[in-house]
Structures are given as C-alpha cells and as structure tokens.
Image (cartoon, rainbow, N blue to C red):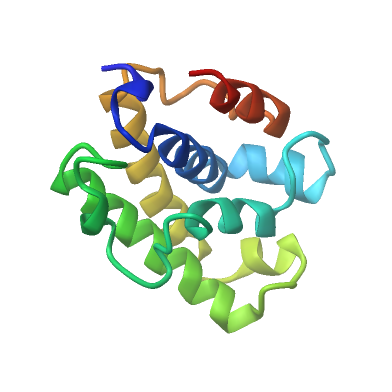
Length: 145
C-alpha cells in the first residue's frame, strides 16, 4: 500500500522517520555521535515521534485508520514510544546523545523502534532496511500530495 493512502500520511511519514532513526544503532553512531549532518539530533527524532500525534499523551490506537493501518501497528508504535520516553524522562530532554545511547535500557528501546519501523515500512510497501532519509528528503516527500 502506498504511504499516501491514509488521511494523515504526513504524520505517518514523520513518525516513520523518527522510528527509523531510533531503530538503527549504526545510524545513531554515525549521525548522533559522529556528527553526520542532515538528520537532526536525537531530540529532533523524539520530537517527530510525538509532536503532532501526541503519542506521549495517548495511545496510537486512537489513530488506527488515519495514521496507523491496524491495531498491530498501533501496539508496536506504543511500545516504542513508551520505551523511548521512559529513557527521555530518566536522563532529561537535553542530554547528549551518548547518554541516551549508553542507557542500559536503550537496546530495548531500539528493538521496539525497529519492530514498529519494520511493521510500518512493510505495510507501506517500502524496504525497512534502506538508510533513513535526511530531514530535507522527509520535507520534500511530505510536501508533495
């Protein structure tokens, strides 16, 4: 299915972008620790994950049929959001990326983000193993339509 078949596909694209970045430890090292430009920092990814959707306040289930295709997607996204936000609340919103990535629960947050990213990408008919899009590529893709 194409990404744009859902009413709020732009929100989905931003959430998918965040989950993609949060799900890839190699990307995190290159972009957030080594300074690979064009992707924003870890805080930007967390913000994209929850900003429009308020997934930090209520369940993704609220968006089944508009942002998420089914309850399985919503459950996977909720699990990722809860794990990432738990760490954010423990270390602080402005902590350096190394603090997040070094947190003992970070691997579980990455795993949950990977599961959610994979489910959404496959359901949209895209390869979940492609590298994350830059922020410019995300803006360009969501400007169309």
